[in-house]
Image (tube, rainbow, N blue to C red; front, side, top):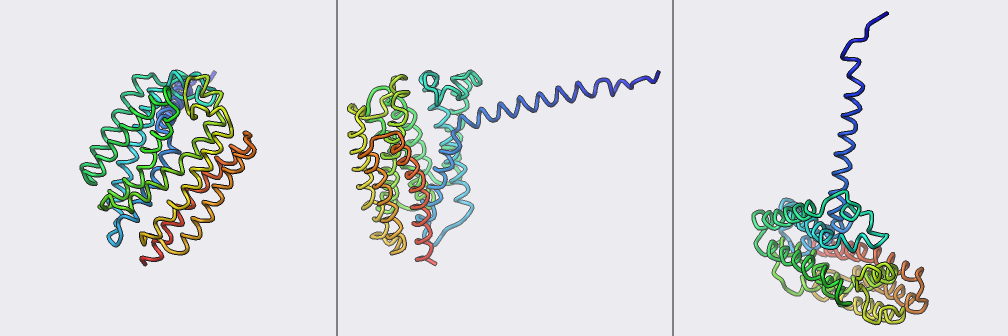
Length: 313
């Protein structure tokens, strides 16, 4: 009988062990990546790019933009990880978040705390060293507001959305500052667009998941927010207020007639979605408003950037 070489005997188990190790590492990486909320970070980085492009004027350069994106990405990722560290108990009470790495037990809270802290500190330090002090300071303030003001406020007051809208509107301002722009009306216009856009967006989310939020003790809607009419009226009000603010860049010569038309049409569509939710007050109408909000923001930012580049080319 032919003998089997020892190397052949041990090769298959070794390959199996190696495969399991690679699988475990990939799973671990995926869990840590989930802690950073990559989709939210991607949207934030898009607005950073818009802010940088408009703030740079005629001295746009790739290297400073890449440094700004890297630093802001680290801060955003750290903020998200720290947010999940503080909320893992309430996340465990909601179906939509119970499978996240912390409430599911795949990552320990202390690991998330260390991971988020390291990313946040590294991001602020990187921005201070490679971009400028203003961008680093604004990024640090954004992290503090998001983690230590907005996150705990979700348990105590329906005003948490207003608090959270401040750090949520900061990314384009960070891009503007990274380009060396002063915090003038241009930066304020970008901040205003992001600030007001968030309210119909998050009110729609709050309505869709109101029972889960209430069960977890989170106050994501106004005090009278169990009424679809109240939430709908607020959504319409903010959507209508967004229209003139979104047109402000044209008065600042950051955009022209093309953007004016695009922003008007997009704003009208956003307001129409809010009115539909006000009239119907259904889950479907809230979901429709949410989808319109997700389409509105990238399109209005793309139109603003494209028209700015058209005017300055």
